Every structure is written in C-alpha cells, then in structure tokens.
Length: 410
Length: 107
Image (cartoon, rainbow over all chains, first blue to last red; front, side, top):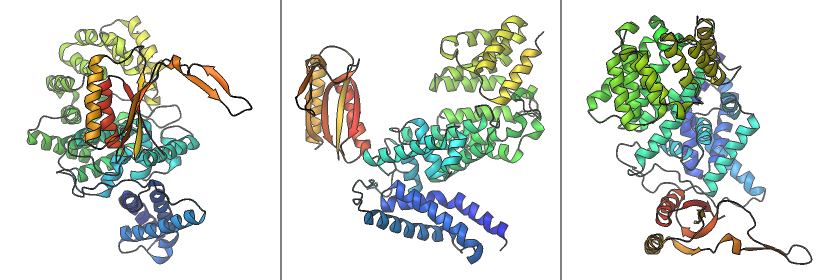
C-alpha cells in the first residue's frame, strides 16, 4: 500500500471512528479526559504503525482496542503517581434503549453531554468539535480566532465542570429530548454559520473546513435520530446553502448576493440531495419546525433557474409561517428582503425601519436598509446606511461588496 | 451527590405568603421523593458579620463579605443523582420562591 493510501486510510478512520472511540471509552471509563487522551494516542500510534504494518482489516476495532489499552495504561500511571482513583465517575444512563426513535449509540450520549445546556454556548461548540468531530485544540482555536491557550482552558474547564457537577452521559428522556436536540442543532448551526460567514480580518470569507464539519456532524445526528424532522431540516438547509458556496464569493473576493449569483456554478448534487430532504419532510405532513421552514425557503430560492423565476409569494408565505414560531427580529429582517421583491422596496423599508430598536448594531440591518434606500433613489441616506453596515460587518467579502455598492451610488 | 441550591435575590423584602406556600409545597415534594437534605431562609445581608481570626486577634466587620446588588437569600441542599435531576428540581424551586437560583455541586 502506498504512503498516500495509508494516509488516506488514517484520515478516513479519523473521520469515521474518532467519535465512536471517544464515546465508547467515555462509557467504559466514565471520564472524558481519559477517553480523549487515549483516543488521541491510539490515532498517533496508527500514524506510526500503519505505514509499516499495513492498515488493519477493521480499523475501528483496532483503534478501539489500542485506545482501551492506552486508557488502562494512563489510569495505572495516574494511580502510581499517588492520585486518588477518580471517584467522580460520570454517570451513564440506566435505560439502554433510550427514547423511541433514537438509535442506541454511545456517540449520541457524547453529543448530548458536549451540548449540555449548563455549558456556555461557545464551550459547547468547542467541546463538540474536540470530542465528537476530533478537531485538535489548535484547529478549533484557529477556527474561532482565539489563542490556543484560551481554547485549551475553555475545554479543560468544561470537562472539569462535567465531572464536578455530574453532567450525565446519557440520551435525555423522551420528555426532554426535543429541547435538547434543538440545543444540539443550535451548536451545529453555529459551527456552520461561522464557516459560511467567517468573521474577522485575515480569515477566508468562507471556511469550508467548518461548513464541511457541521454537515458531517449533522449527518451523524440524522443517522442516530432518524425520526427527528428538524435534524433533516437542518441538514437540508446546510446542503442547500453549501451548494451555493463557490458562487457566493467572486474571483476578486467580494460577496455575491443570492440574486446576483451565477446559478450555473451551484453544486447540482448537493441541491438535489437538499431538495429531496425538503420533499421528504413535506410528505411527512407534520408541522415543520424552524429549520425545516428555513430549508423550504432555501429550496424555493434554489429551485428557480433564473432569479426572475423565484416564487417570492411562496418565500414570504414561508417567512410568515416561520415568524409564528420564532419572533426573532433577524427573521423579520429576512422576510422584509423577500417583501421588497413582492410588494416593492417602499413597503419593505417600512418593515425594516420598525426593527431599528432591536437591530441597530447588526450590520445586515444597515446593509438591507442601504439597498432599499438605493432602490428608492435616496442616495444620501443609502450612503449613510452603507457606511454603518461596513463599520459593523466582520466578513472580508461582505465588506468588499458593501464598499463597492456604496461607491457606485450617484 | 449533593448540590447547594442558592436563592439569589435582588429585591429587598421577604417572601410573600403565596411564595411561602409554594415553597412549602416544593419542600414537601423534596422530602417525599428523597431529595431533601436541608434548607433555610436567611436574614438580610446587613445583619451579617464577617470574622477573620487568621491573625493574632479576631477581626470583626459589620456587614456581608461582599457588597453587591444581588445576595444569597436562602438555600436548599438537595440529593440528586446527576445535574439534570438537580437542574429540574432547581427550576421548580425557582418557580416556587419566585427568584433566580444557582446550582452548585458539593465536592
């Protein structure tokens, strides 16, 4: 086997097996630290051994066995050092079958523990990327533009809290499941959005590593919770968004809005999969949650071959449905963008202006206003709104786009 | 596993009769379901005295160790198998006493 093939096999095993190994070890040893250390050592051993010994027939079993041995060594070493045997072992669920519609898998326990609502949202994101996705601490630190030591501390503190406060290692009860799943989805959506609209100077405007990781994790959750419509909705939303990734930033590094994108460059396979998932949810005839509605909106946009074919009344109707579930002013802002196409910029501007109290510090509020004012030939006001949007925007491609638009005002 | 469930208050004044009644119901439930360890309400922070006897002579300071807008008004110590159970109970406690609550595990 060539060196490249072995490297490929290790990367694949890391993608497919990391979470499984960490989850199984956490269950066996009741300790996230032990599981993380041992899994990392097992993969390091694979990197050292597989090129010479060849890739084992069952890489997952090899990694689990190796990690188990490393964990036992690690615990022995710790005990020899005179440390007390850890008495604060994590608690595992007593109910092995879990709520209905849930596949029993240690990875699901791991995900729910990492996304526990008693942890701060940034901590949940970091812990999920480390323990479930297997990103290294330096990778996560880079993704969120914080120092490695800061990220290391955040993850260490989270693991200590899980142990000290006894955050359980189990799938929540059927009664708590919907709320806890939506907490997990919020973490994944945050990872995706950070990849899709990366903030900060010096970062790529679209971080494919993060969007890909979010999609991979959402696929995993879907496999583990096959009956949850919102998981399908989020996956569809991510796929339909990811399909437009390359069309979203121009060669000169400028953001290209949905309306101006070259639709021929959209990824047909991702669109087809996303559309299929949206149809699957429509066929289920169950009242959709917010991710399913957002996915449906995205499906309406991406169904139109030409932007002029967009069914704006359908988009507005979906936003109306969404607003009944979620009164967030950001959703009201996005609805106004669709209203501008259906009822004209004047009606939309009135709706946007009503959001000022809540969104005055949000760049997209000012960018949307700037665009509507431009279309109403109110150049001076538009320019002021562009200035404010540029000042508040964090994404380099978006700043480039807004700056050009402002400078084109007459 | 035991948790300290602290009642955080930022209003002057004791619990209303309605709140007292709701707390009694909640306490009875804690006892019936085996979560009860101990509980108590505290007098105003201004009635506190801080003592430091690490030196030669005990030093007394009138008032609480920390001046803040929010203070500890009372607490429960509960027995719960894990944080999920503790948080659920604390949520009910917060409703009963109509105040914010902090949950903190004992070592």
